[in-house]
Amino acid sequence: MRARYGIPLGVTAVGAAGLAYAAGFEVRSFRLRRVEVPVLPPGMRPLRVLQVSDIHMVCGQKKKRRWLQALAALRPDFVINTGDNLSDPDAVPEVLDALGPLMELPGAYVFGSNDYYGPKLRNPARYLVERARGRHGLNGNAPVHGAIHNPWEELRDCFDTAGWVGLNNARGRLKFPDGIEIALTGLDDPHIKRDRYATVGGGAEPGEGLSLAVVHAPYLRVLDAFTADRYPLILAGHTHGGQLCVPFYGALVTNCDLDTQRVKGLSLHRAGGRESYLHVSAGCGTNRYTPVRFACPPEATLLTLTPQE
Image (cartoon, rainbow, N blue to C red; front, side, top):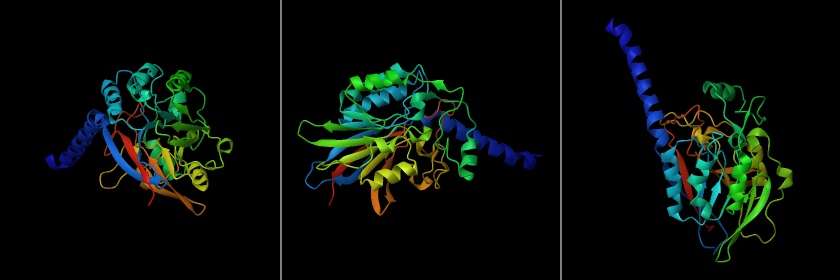
């Protein structure tokens, strides 16, 4: 009898322990990653960029709010928010409270699908099935009937009032007291087909010292376009780093058509004989209906941009 039931009970116990760890500890084990990227023109001073992404705020997440507030002590040169701030239509005040100290710094933002629409309960196994079938998350489709409208307009207005530059299918600039100026080009979320590259395409303006590209979901069509237009660095989020990863193996899904080897961190993207650095943030939150992370802690990233050799 012991041999018959011992192994199944042991597997169940290990699974329960893993779920408890993923939901009770790792999902709140916030990390800061530091990355150097050689993309600046020769002779330009280094710039420090704090990227925050996929906050997915739910009312009452006090530890997440305090951690985000504390990031302002890093004093980056500027902040890039790559979207999906919300996972609760009532959480706009808490997002603004969490980001308040960072909004005192220069910054820019794009939105993700969860800024526009509330999440729906969904079987996580469907992501694996869709991946196997060659479909990727929503596969670039807009939400269907019954989607909950999030108050993204309020979020946008507060970001704009703070001086952050909106980059949803738009271009913008950040200027610093020492005379340095960088150009930014952004897209609205490709995950729900809000991207309009034709409105911002063409690459850097003549004489621009540094131009960066920003988007929420790193779909290949977007990465190819940015790379073809010679942007040296593309910043994205959306993937949650895989969220539930296999130790010593990595992510199983990316929720877009990006390969799992580049689900988070710094990599190179090549298209049309050119290449760009791509940085994908694993983000610091989760969908409210799947509040777990495993082998993929929540994060923000401090990128130090350095001169090219």
